[in-house]
Image 1: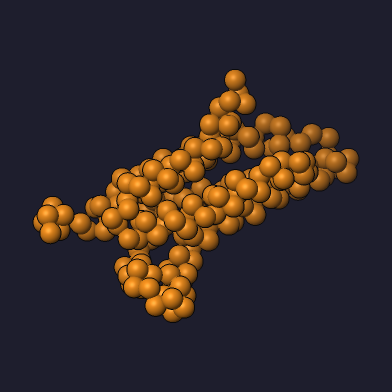
Image 2 (image 1 turned 30 degrees about the vertical axis):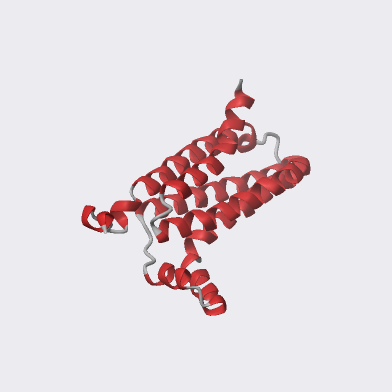
Length: 179
């Protein structure tokens, strides 16, 4: 039963990204956010079967993927400008010009950063445990999995909130909708 819950929380972010992409399609910045986040999520989904076989190094993979999830938030504006300069596609310029960082994005940064720290600590702890320098891998056995699920759940809620508040955040009014 616990494995089923872990599987649900593992795959739920990709569905939330797809939902967010569909729900916010008319809002350029939100769409750009979900596109960039979706690319990182797809990369993670493609690499995770390989990483699961790494045993000890799986935790450093998780930390690196956590770091990769920060990239769409932190560098989205620069990426939009870079793409505009190379393609001259107006959409990327509008994403660059209208870019703002929301409270939900800041929450995701904090959650992903905390997850990165937990995974890095777990990696170091597992290395120490395998080297017989410590007797118990407390974080790995008692903290990491539950913390990962809790942080994943909070991130899912933050992404949902980001999608649902995109209309308010991007300043679309009832008058703008009718035009």
